[in-house]
Image (cartoon, rainbow, N blue to C red; front, top):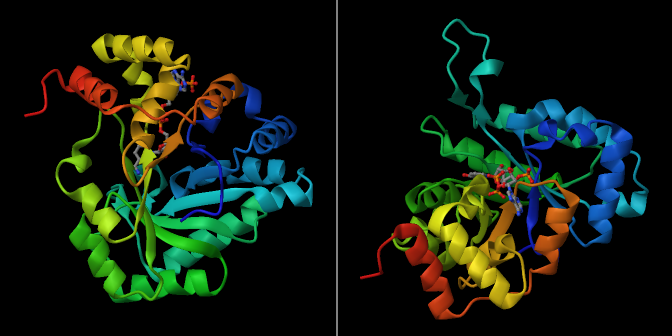
Length: 287
Ligand SMILES: NC(=O)c1ccc[n+]([C@@H]2O[C@H](COP(=O)([O-])OP(=O)(O)OC[C@H]3O[C@@H](n4cnc5c(N)ncnc54)[C@H](OP(=O)(O)O)[C@@H]3O)[C@@H](O)[C@H]2O)c1
């Protein structure tokens, strides 16, 4: 579904924790290096809107030809408690058309981009006016502000309800997915996505780094040595081997780790290898 040939998406959620990337100059140079490596797709969310200023300043330092290569996926609709100044201070969801419009317009302006690659609803919202939100999402695509629309963490009945109120086909779903979080392959969720032509974006594909621990970590290391790749490369290959090929949204921003993942991206696993990793994390054999 995606225009890009990037082997995986780079999630920008951890940007505030990288001291070396806190100036527009350093971040611009980081983007430049990634684009030269063919890593052109990035994941951003309204949850991290505080970093849009820095991202935009960095992007404005890039030559126009490189800005055109940048593909930004963005999700929205979750309001953290820290941004709620009403007297109850709850975390809540907002999928109202006026809110989604505000988010997209602000992000494009701040980031200095003309179009988002993907605009996604971050969570199913029990208070969503499906007809109104569906129309708003269609309008975002029709006006050229996003190339495609997706959802995150929706059940099939939830995305089909929204889809029925939209002209634009829902292109993708983002969810947490890795060797350690694979239930969607067994409960029908992944098949529903494939049946509905929705690509999968696998968030936390290394389970936030915990995948390298214990028995699974050992197994990844042994397999990595066999294939002469990195253990992280094997973990992404586990995803890549699944028919429909979920695209990982990786969390590291370290150049060396990203380069290793890009280098290892061609690997797919045999059936026995794929099931061996599953068995290592679940600690029991498939029935
Ligand atoms: N829609 C959803 O439900 C959902 C759920 C979860 C996540 N997500 C998205 O997925 C993105 C990534 O999540 P994540 O940060 O948990 O991703 P991840 O790629 O699973 O984990 C990244 C962590 O692994 C560490 N790591 C350790 N060894 C590594 C190695 N060899 N190579 C690469 N990383 C290594 C990294 O440390 P360093 O940073 O020190 O390199 C980083 O802290 C986020 O941007 C988030 O928005 C979506």
